[in-house]
Length: 460
Image 1 (cartoon, rainbow, N blue to C red):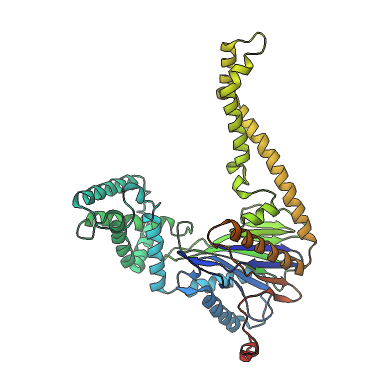
Image 2: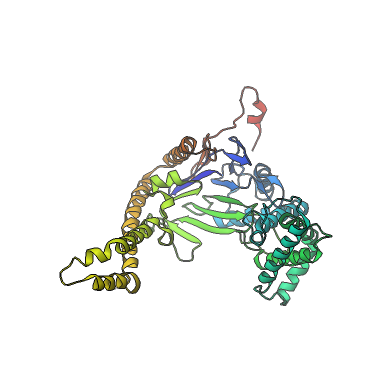
């Protein structure tokens, strides 16, 4: 896990990030998650999720080293691109140009294994096992093979047709570029879930391979099922645009012949907008102010939203409104008849009819739930509006200071109340302005100038 924050107004942009990274039970607090372009360019990149770009097997440090070289050679070290959309197209084009087949297939293998055969995988529900490749008795093996076979037959009954020409072209390309990987993945999924090897369950392995092929054809563009994804937020000021904007993408493994949907959304500062983001298409959001927390930001949201996000900050998942309706329902069930029957002229039978009507025929519970949601949401919006109005007044350096403070709060509170250091100090903070470009406000891992003079003499 990590904790990151983007704060943006017409005067500048700040990116703030913690330094935690974990693998299994091991963790470190020295990972670089914010990157710049060559020269003074007012553009920054911030990464969260996988510490490598899965299609290459390279760390993001190495990827941005390569991108800086690519950018300098293509555009010139100090060239600022015309629009932020130009920066977006250039960066995405670069990422799609550097994958290595072996690394990409290896990462895609693990994506499929995780999605279909992890503890909560799509196929795991059909077998009773500990999801480990352990030896099993013959009778148990046969039962697991049969259970998985039945589950697959049920899945196949609900699959869409992929006999059209477009799907067949995709199938041919996937078999050509990922076929061997799919063979290994299918065999390993069956072994992990049942304990059976290739010789013991060839028909089952063929069924699983067919499902993997179908999945990559129908869902290859979707990033949500992949385990190896990285979320990147990048942006700042372009050469021609007076106000900043950012783009958020989620990148991961590539499947031949299928264009991945990497774009999530864009935040665009507009001085003609209010301080709360609005969007016409669900992709491009406009506002005078943006305060975006990424990954683990629950402590930050308590300050910026005035509520713990675990309560649910949308109508669909709000626990406050649900609790109000539930409490009302329990009261009516437990005490309704008794209390209503106390009214003169209303006996127990009539009271029972009234409570039944309220519970089953009327919209009382929904109305109470909606009322409490409106109350909760108005208070949250009032706090958010107050905070955003304050951010609208901040200078660029104050944006950086605020971002650093909020990430430090998240890290400190994590340290105090949670057992694992999923968010950790130190905090890196950069600030972007039209006038001064990219400037570090806080930065770890800076070499000692006294013993590394050549490092500081290098042109970057």
